[in-house]
Each structure stands twice: as structure tokens, then as C-alpha cells.
Image 1 (tube, one colour):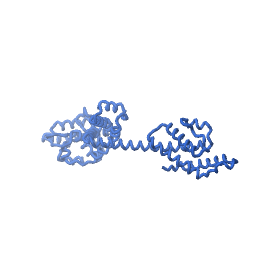
Image 2 (tube, rainbow, N blue to C red):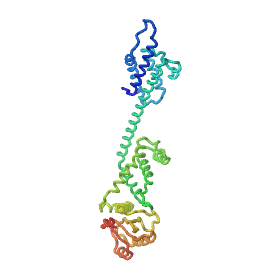
Image 3 (cartoon, rainbow, N blue to C red):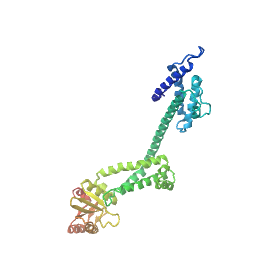
Length: 355
């Protein structure tokens, strides 16, 4: 492997090593070997350094700095066997910092620092690569769990959609309920995987997601986004009348609210208990419509109309409306006409858009 950032530094070191060699041989007898050239020194030392830098990969993922120190000392010892001008090399078992305190040749210290830097850089690259591979592996395993338990995930979508889509008194969706449903889904899948549900539930309750197996951690982090995508598809979905008839009570209420919001109304919910006969409050300009959404089997009777009459007064509405997926009894229609309450049945749901 080539190290572009290391070559420039190594060239400077070679130049310094050449100057040291020239100084050492200057004025000596003819028996001293010829002065080495910069290129010759580089050609001698660079392959040795590269081979030791590559050896860092043999200990992939090892994080101890002592490992790099030891490998640097070993590299220096081999270089000295070929280029004695750099002697003394670190002794076997000697710490690098102790060798530096023994006043080695001036060029040896920066050479050791450059070797150490390149090895450390190599180690960091490998550790980062290992981390990325581990994350990719965990991500794949997490996706496998999502695919394996698609039935549980789809049930989570349905439950969370039903709870989150209900509007609060301010007209906002109850998104604060989503984390609890995510936790419940993860616990259910953990149980199917043979893990202790109580332990997983306890870790999630205490906020210790990191204690879960990595694939479950990934699921836990991904499910809010997956739900958000599902939620957007549900909001933009155009339902047929047959689909509306099959909705639950809460889902029908959500459907009515979504249609009204799509047509410019400001919509808020009412308390789940003590709602005084109203499910939704829709406001536009100077109009304030108090609405009861009645998902019903059979015909809706007088009681729903009577409740809305009282709710209009209670919430200060300008008008009242009962919306159902079914039909109304003749008595309910007569009572609604007498009290100026608008009725929209399952066959006339399109009238919601022109309320």
C-alpha cells in the first residue's frame, strides 16, 4: 500500500539521513564505505517501512498504542541491520520513549516518529473500516428481523397509526405516544427471538437501548422513520366507501378529521372521556362545527343527534354535524332537522369535502 502523505515526509528524512551519513564519513580513511546517496537510502529503507506498516493489518482492530510502539521498534531494528548509521536501535523489550532518551542519531528520532505515524494512521483506517463493516452487518441483521417479523411490524403500524392520528384538544396528532408503541413492538420481536421480554422491556424503560443486541438497536432506531413513511402514505390515501365502512371507530374519526383538514379546516379533538357528545371541533373563518363521528353497525338513532345538540352549546359552536359510515333512522333525521344539525351518512361521505 502506498502512503502519499508519508512519502513526502520520508523523502525529507532520507535527505536528513544522507547529511548525517556524509558528516560521519567526512574526514575518515579511504577504508570507510562510500557515502550513500539519498535515492539509495530511500530504496533501502522505504520497502522495510512499508512492510511493517502493512503488518498492522495482521492485528486488525487492536487498539493498544503499545502494539504500534513495539512494531516501530522492531522496524527500526531491522533498518539498523542494513543501515548501521542509525544505530543504536531499540533493544528487544525496550520502550520506544526510553530509546529516544538514549540520544540516538539526530535523524533516527524523526524517522521513528514518521514510522509510528504511518502505522497509527494505518491502524485507524482499519479500525474505521472494521466499524463500518460491523455497522453494515448489524444493519443487515436488523433488516432481516424486520422482514422476518413483518406481521408484527405491520400490526405496529396499525396500532401506532390509530393512536397517533387521534387529534388532541390543540388539533395536533398524539406523536408523543409513538415511542411507547415502538418499544412494545421491539419487545414483542425480542420475545419471538427467545429473549426475555421483561429484561428487554426494563432496558427500554430505563433508556438503556445500548444494552440490546445490535440488530434490535437498529430496529429501534429505524422504526420511527418507517412509521413516519407509513403515516404519510395513510394521510394521502384516498379511501373507497367500502374501506371506510371497514374502519374502526377511532380510524373513522381520524378519517373524518383528515378529510376536513385537507379541505382547509382547522380540526381539534376532544377528551377521550367527558367529551360531552363531540369527537371533533372544526373551525374555518367564522364557523365552528361540532362533530360526532359515528362508526356504526345499523342505523344511527336520536341519541347521537341529542348529544351533538348539547355539545354545540357546551363548546360554543355555530353548528353541529353527525357523520356516520352507516345510515340514520327517520326519527334521527326529523330531530336533526328540527335542531339544525347536519347529517352525513355513509352514502354521502363526499359531502364532508363541501361541509
